[in-house]
Figure (cartoon, one colour):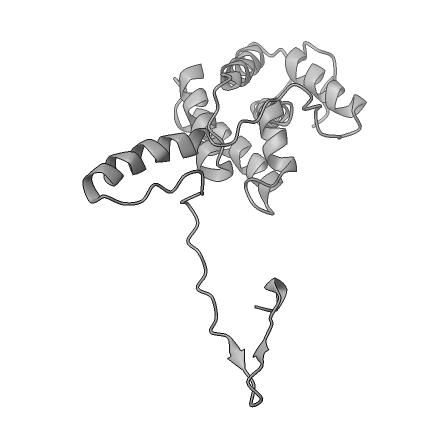
Length: 195
């Protein structure tokens, strides 16, 4: 199972090429700044980093199940997973570059060329496995709220409801517990953590 580590290895077995492809997909995702921001902020919950690994596997499966998979198919998957798993709606079209990089890796590996994967691996090793810099990622909160506001305005006009303003409507409020009154008539004060 040893293969030369030069950038243009042509002696790789199909299994080794598949492993290189999976590694290349993972590196392409690892270098995607917006995904790194989502993981660092745990927008996908405590298992945000695991979701990146899962996404890499899903993209690999996409190609395994359909050899005619195109960059647009990868872009759609990237956007869908970002929105469904991390609550992120992209506007910067960085998914296009990530999908193109994955397609380049696939094309090169089809020719027995591991140059891009090796370059990505070297870049990762140079950072010693640290997350990619996220310095130029701009996060705008509230874009999704604006969409919800327009829906609320339509129902406000019909029902005569009071406008909610900027309050998020996605999380249901927990009911407040009834106040505890002791035998002397004093109300027990409970902090937020004690509820």
